Length: 282
Image 1 (cartoon, rainbow, N blue to C red):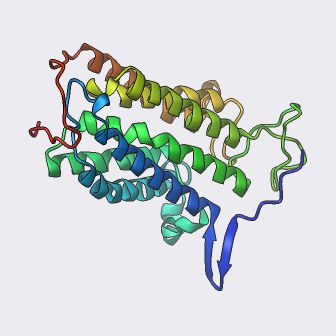
Image 2 (cartoon, rainbow, N blue to C red):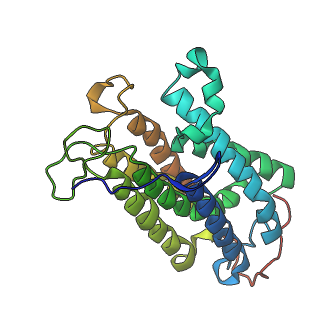
């Protein structure tokens, strides 16, 4: 099927343009922010521990996370995928509006931001990570939809009836891998994490929700790399590996360690926890 005639620019006012890609980031951050606030305000989710921070502190955290996403995502893209820019055109590194963001770089940027925020506010890092990762699939979903609208990061050639002929990708129909990622990294992973937070009450086990996110995302990304077209400027790695696979495998291992560690840690006695009760610094 032909690629839909999407305009990547939603509104153009003179030199000022509002792009779908930018709106995807805004929507993911805003919805994730409100979801995280809802988690800490729900006493039914915190039967053995108090929430690690208040809703007011989450308001402050949003700026830290946003900077981590933008700075880490851009630097990650440059370091992992286009290191030649550092020498050939370093000014282009700052031109975020032209595209080129790495999820793995953004995840690392957010991780560093969380460490700084946790140290500054004397908040438990494991529980803080649980809350942030529980809200992350919203951003992944909107980001992958924006990738599809932009006609970028397409999949490998396919004979499937839902194959899409993307502009600039040749005449062959290709997997709409952006939509696969939106469904799996966004919706499916969100469902798993909702089960973990609201069903299994795993926010009481520090780091387990974050572990499920890292392991789940890594497994999904490794699987979908088999239908996603590698970037043309990347070298051929041995054993059919791609850069996305190599960056995701450590995430899987880290996630499994977080789950193992959190499930082994003894739970405090069950207690009634006030909605906004802030625990003593860890």
